[in-house]
Length: 438
Image (cartoon, rainbow, N blue to C red; front, side, top):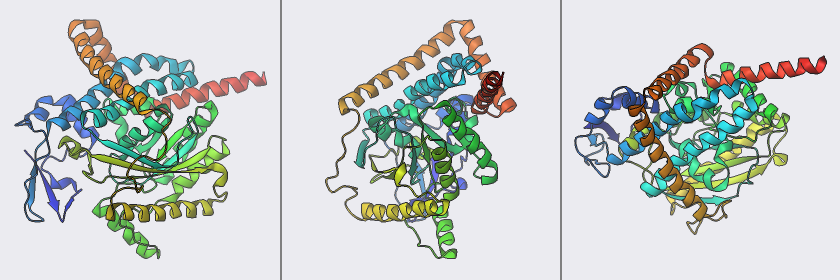
């Protein structure tokens, strides 16, 4: 069994709260599954259908069993992303050196097929209910999505919303740079040109400039998800946020953290100047039951029973033009989120009085169900087929090994596939400018 601590009605987020500290990130989970599957599977003594928690007084030690649901979810996503990176994205890598814009167009759509898999698992297999209220998306529009960061998994749960109200192929996410080295997940994120940051503005500013200018140059619609809070809501992060509020004479928050506005204002200004921004979507996410704070809670089978999204759309024409006013605008949105979430959690746990989705989706629920069923069938069949091919054919095994080496070594040599793609784009742009001069 795995051990974790529960104190004062909250799961503690410290890494030393479990004797298995490796189970604190997707990277660690992937490493265990990929490198030491026997160690991973030995944890499961019995197959359990739900998270088992042995109640006791606050502050006592609790024991949680890894559930079959959690194992199935993590393994399915990991193997799909791992084999998808090797056998679906791998053959497309040479296209980067001939036409970065076509490479981007094709790989965005291939990656989007995998993004439907977590949606299918959460809703079909685990029965999660999705409720969306507020404003709708305009299909294909270019936007910045700002969202409160309740758990470390919010970015993945948002796909349940975007599948209905937008196109998953348009989404890019700002993520911490350590995630890009994860086998499978990280490789696919590099191919998808997600923006990896170090959370130090001096280092991140230049990278933001390069990536945002690239998306503007190739005229590919972009929906960029950012978390202005910078980290997820825990007791520790809330204490730091309240300390900041006290020093600066601001309101202390209970349900959100004070946003960091420097990156937000820079992104909005850069995309607006590059004529690649139509709106800002301000999304508030809430979980009435089962809040999976970290990846390890998914292994315990602690999936959300309901995910509520409230969407507010702000056209770019309505946004302030000065940087200072844009910062105040962002802070105002977080004041509204705090009040909205307070009413949600202290009330009936609905953003809307009816408790049902108010806005018509861009796609019918029947169409969404068809997409989810196809995704579940395809990725299950694809994963099994790759195992069979690896077992039967030596040339497939050689191809597999070569691609793994390429994915690992390119990151050491170039820093990531998204940076290599950026370098290729600069090369072709410079070549085009020189030819125009001649």
